[in-house]
Length: 130
Image (cartoon, rainbow, N blue to C red; front, side, top):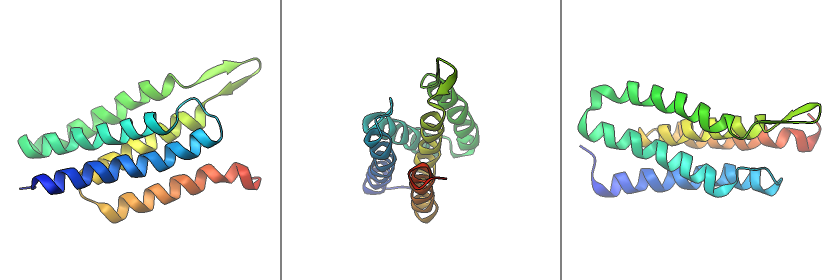
C-alpha cells in the first residue's frame, strides 16, 4: 500500500520530468510547451496512482486507455502548413511524456528518468543537424 508522501513524490516527479520536456518544446517555440507537457505527465501519473490504489488489477487497461487518449490530444498539435506537416514531433513528445508519467506513477523511477533524458536528447537531434 502506497503512503500519501509516496503518491505526492510520484506526482511531483512526473510533473517535473514532463516539464523538462515541455521546456525544450517551448524553447523552440512549439505550440505545446511546459504547462501542456506537465499536465499530461501529471495526469497520466494520477490515473495510474488512482487505479493502483483502488483496482490494481485494472492498471493495464487504464494505461492502454491513456496511450490511446493521448494520441487524440497529440493529433490536435498536428496541422498542415502550405506543403508540409507541422507538429509531429510535439505530438510525439506529448505521447512520450504520458508514458513518462505512467512510469513514475508505477514507481519505476530509474526507467522514467532514463526515458526523460532520452526524450530530451532525441529532441536535441535537429539542433545538431541530425
